[in-house]
Image (cartoon, rainbow, N blue to C red; front, side, top):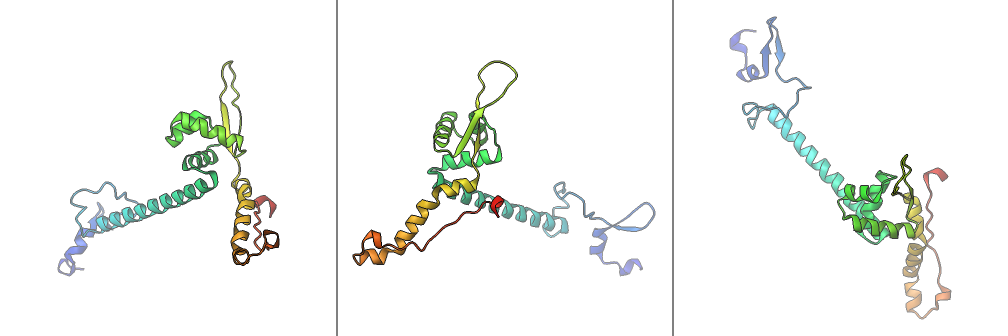
Length: 195
């Protein structure tokens, strides 16, 4: 190929190595983060690839954040408050944490965490045991959240009753007695271990 046959755009994309052979200037494994101002020209392949990667990462972050917020919202409904939901999620991720570790990990005030953990323990939604240590002294409680299936089982009866009440609404509005209600809605929760 003669120099006249070479497209000037191709010259930007190729380099000549010490042996005189032509190689692709853009190594696929090359990091895009160390682009120079010259490489970052708006139309360059590196800049386009970097922009595409940044858009994908931003969308993935938004999706994860949205998923996390939806889970927290659902758990807040099950556990009564967002604070308790955040503590529950943290304990599922970090079983055996102390109240201080939960406060550090969630960014909640230590007194708020201690109060919520005491309530959750009293309700049977978290378990606790003393942390074992070699030395003498005050061993703090370690907490673990119950399995999600157990948490759901705790509200199934309430939800089932409410759905059956809605189902029987027309009958009740027509003057029927509560004892005549049907119960067509039955909710069953199966844990992975029971399948």
